Each structure stands twice: as structure tokens, then as C-alpha cells.
Length: 195
Image (tube, rainbow, N blue to C red):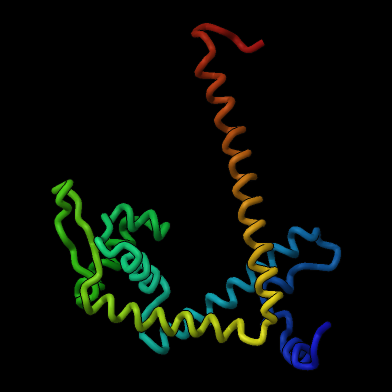
């Protein structure tokens, strides 16, 4: 049951301010509405975090994510591994690395296993700066979800976990249907024709 506070908040949300979710009509398929709601919530939280990082630390979310990956890997990461973790191109990682090295937050080291590769890792100053940002980042998320019922949060977390498993299963099915025809074609003797 919605509270009076909820109704007051909703009155201030018109189609312009609510964004993508406002595009869903009542007769749209429930999957479309669910996807739009997930996207709208994720986008709204991300925009708030981006804004706070910019205002409080004069930094960006990609820089924060970069530092977070290096904090998780204290020994450092090869540039190509960092690129994969961040799901961005090597050029993007190189540009960020150049900036962060110049600021003294990250250092480049020769890879002892491959002289052609470089490892990047946080400096002591980079670690201290990241930990300061991470503490506030977590506090912001706690604040954004504050007042949202604990049981509802737990249920939503569990449901989203189930959704991730479901989507991973669907992805595996799609990959399997793409691999089987290739395997069959590869197994077919030369000169064999489709019947």
C-alpha cells in the first residue's frame, strides 16, 4: 500500500522527469514494462552517482570504476585484462591510464612474465583516494535506498538474482543453437550435400 509520502513524490513525476518508463503504455507486454522500469531505476541511480562523484571528487564514474578494479587486484592488472573487466576498448583504458599516472594515482610497471606487456596498479595515494571515494559511494547508495523497506529490498535482490540466472540460461541456449550448426557443418564430410 502506497504511503502519503509516496503519493507526494509521484505527483512531481511527469512524463519528462520519469523518463523511459513513461513510454510504456498499459497495453504493452509486461516484459517490456519490466525492462523499462529496471532501466529507468538503474539510469536514475547511475545519474545521481555520476553527479555526486563529479561534485564531491571532481571525477567521473569510469575513473571510479577503473580505480575500483585496481583496488580489487592489489598486484595490478595487465592493460588488456583491465580493458576486459571494464568492458571498454584498449584505447579508452590507455587514455584513463595516462591521466591517472599523471595525477600520481596509478603506476605502470613492466610485466615480469611478458616484457611486451605493462601492468598498472594503484599507488599508495591512489589507494587512499579510492578508499575515500568508495566509502562515500557506499554511503550514497545506502542513502538512496534508505526508507525502502528492508524486506522489499531483500525480495528485490533475490528476484534480480533469479533474473540474472534466467538470463544466463537464455544466453547459454542461444550460444548452443549457434554452435551446433557450426559443429554439424564441420563434421560433414567434404563433398557432402545438404539433403
